[in-house]
Length: 193
Image (cartoon, rainbow, N blue to C red; front, side, top):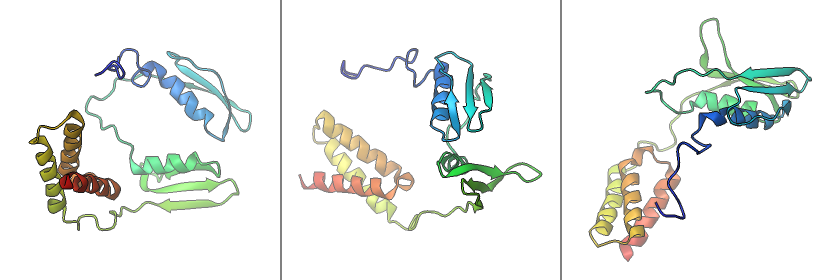
């Protein structure tokens, strides 16, 4: 790391510090059109006090539990969709449907401010053309350009570009179409030099 970009001090970074979780929760509540007031919160606080649009006050208490070491740290599509719709100013709420046993992860009930209620059905649908691309040819082409760069006594920026091209080639099936096209354009430019 350079002095311009010093290494992250994990003991002091608010992005990695659990003491700032109450602050982040308060910020999220302030962004909601359904919350009219959130009391000031500082690092290390364990409660967040807020008032809803009806004037009712609530207190959220943060209870710490031991994290699961192997837990997957991803947002699932159904949670992300419900949160995105529920946080939109036009909607009052959006929640996963709860039949008598468990949650229905394929259906979300959304209620608009104008009183319309919808059941949204989530259906998995791979992106168009997914799996039909000649992945081996495109990925091999990126890897070949990266190899050409690495073997030509590259500068630091050229080495970084080669590493990025290798990464995209190795994870081709996981990348979106835009990133694939950008990587191919970079490879074409470098191949002609």
